[in-house]
Each structure stands twice: as structure tokens, then as C-alpha cells.
Image (cartoon, rainbow over the protein chains, first blue to last red):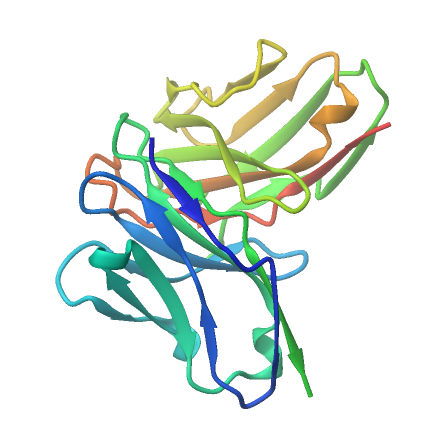
Length: 115
Length: 117
């Protein structure tokens, strides 16, 4: 079965600094990968997704992610973090083994942004 | 347009009671999912509807959990004889088309926080 690992439970960065959130997946075939952000009291919002093609994917809010098959990774990056980026970030992969195509999520990375 | 809505936003109940959680998907979305998110964890899949039928309920933890979608739109997640371990945020998501390819974006509601005392 597929799985997603987010090694960092909590990351703290200063506003204006660059950010990289790590995501590793375990899946036999080409994975369909997603990054979602969750702010308090709000639903999960899709930042970006990768299905095929260019391995560098651009998303909303200035985020990007790079798919690296050799490392089984799909790390999320942002060159300059804003205070409003403080939230919890989830990496997910689509389970293609059944008909539901449900998402399998990592356990999340909580981002704190210092002024 | 309107997103996925869920009611109530918070529900506190006592152990052993019955609860219903409601999800109103985005209009026109045929696929609907329920997930459960425990504290400090990512969401975990519970059940998937394609139209009115539960196409995949493999994520339901036991037979105390049941969900319906009688008219192919609004869905209700029902939990009988609640236990303290059922305390979590229950998330609903919808997507536009039958997700045969797996590429359809799932749009999430804000969730219902269930607390079982």
C-alpha cells in the first residue's frame, strides 16, 4: 500500500526566509501527488498537484514543488515566506488501487513564521 | 461560488449517544468523500460515494459508522453508540467527476469537530 512520510512535525522560519517542507512517498507506480494547506477553522486547500510531465510544479500563493523519482520525494518550497503562510501543510498521494481514488495523507508539518 | 459546507462545526456528545454529521458538497459534484482527522494526524479515508451509492466504504472503522447520500447531493455520516475514541475532526470533500483517473481535485469542507465525553 502507498504511504506518505513528512519527517518534520514542526518547522519555524523567519518571515522573508526561504522554506522547504519535505515529503517522501512509497508507491510502486508513478504517483499522483498533492500538497494541501490547513489553517485553523478552515478546510484543506489545494496548493498544487503533480500527475506527470514537468517535475517542477507551480502552485498558488507562490509555492512550488519538485517531484524526484530517484529520491521518492515531493518537497514543497517557497522562496520568501509571509506571516500568513503559518499553517499546517499536508502531502498526499492518490490511492489508485481501488475505485475510490481516495487521498492518503502524511501526518503534516506545522509551520510557524516569526516576525 | 459556494464551497463544501459541513454542519455542525462543533458537536459535543456523551459516550453511547448517536450523532449525525452533515455534508453539503459543491453543486454538481458527483463524488463525495468522508475523512477523519485525529489530533496530530493527517486525514484518513472513511467512505466514498459516487452519486447515491457508497462505492467504497473500506475505511469505516466498524459497524457503528454509517453514511448515506440519498439524493446524490447532501450526505450524512452517522455514528451509533459513540466512544471517546471517535473524537476527531470529520472532513467531507467533493470532486466534480467520477474520479476514475485519480486526477480530480478534491475540495474540502471546514470539518465537524466531534468531542465524545
